[in-house]
Image (cartoon, rainbow, N blue to C red; front, side, top):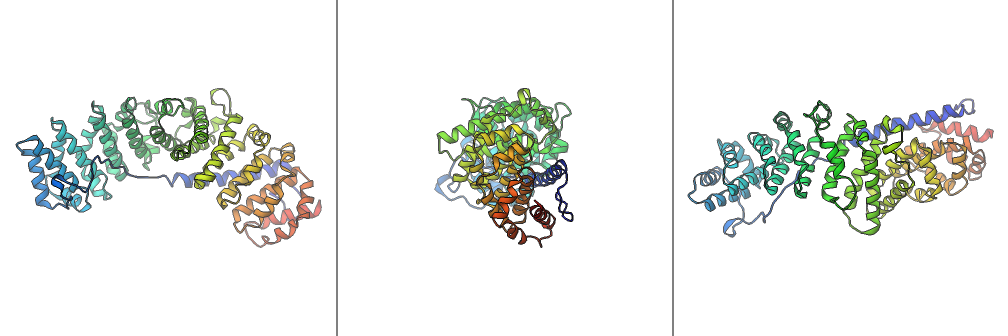
Length: 498
């Protein structure tokens, strides 16, 4: 920061360190905000047309009498087909919130349904599980808690032989997990983490995708960093084999499945966000695997217009960004090394893809670029040697959030010293900075001022060019803004005393 009253520069090291501290504080706040915006959702599996019931009739809202009738038929019907049809009708009725409410308050209904779930007749068991699945998808928390008597059976059936049935149980558990803390409190001592860990070696992609969904729901729970992720061996996520298998499923190659990879990339993101033991993930090769996956996604973007790729790119970028903030990454050697021009090139391929197809994801890529360049002269050198400053500047008009991140990356480069600033200036940077200084957004202007501070430190001729572009008049517009006053005044004094 500049010393405004005296109009003189503080020692270079002091200025740069203060700029770094200010950015670290801002980035920590942004990371916290992103963790608090994690997506929670439910999934619904339906194999048939939901509005059509047996006999061609539209599925109706069921009252107590109809529910009791279908349950009795399912329990005591003389023919297996008749019993199965009764459960199909009940399941379709349970698609309605009104029927769900009636069902859970009807005495004995859940006990009967759980009894059918434990039946030795496979078709009845499957239809009973589908009824539970409909209930698990309810938006009413009371409905989810009413399913508590079934959870131990759902967990037991994860070790079964039918991949379709396991998939259904996993999605049902995932829906229940996200809805109710009471459900999670019951599932943890029942052994949900070991049960999920056992499923991860399944050869069936549908099971793996469902497992990724259920696990991601568990990892998003507010109590996950204290009760679910930490590692007293065997009883938690980090104490199980899950992390190693998650990384295995994210390794690029012909066996990589997009749907499975998306689910487990989000799982990894939630584990990393918990900040419980990211050094463990790094020691298992997490950085290098994610780096290779980033290259793979960038290559796929160049080969295809598949719109599903951004679904994988987003969590991969977040995982890499957050892992790079760990102290353990400061030693960037051996298998954890990411200092590679290919990573920067891949990132810019994705930034161009996002710009054209999904601009809302640009901040994710720029966040990673910020973390790559923050402490690494190597990545800053790659940025300059590959002539990527101008493509970076072209992103400035997209939004204020994007502008702040672009300017932060440029600050990372500039603070590496005179040799780096010499590559930044002269060039298209000054006209762009004059544009961002004219912004009405305080953060954009503040970051522009930080970049100018660094340029004035290391490239004295930048001051003259700034004055020739009427820079002082531009600064005057912000001298009454409380958050900017000190920096504006310091820059004015520096420019006048050069």
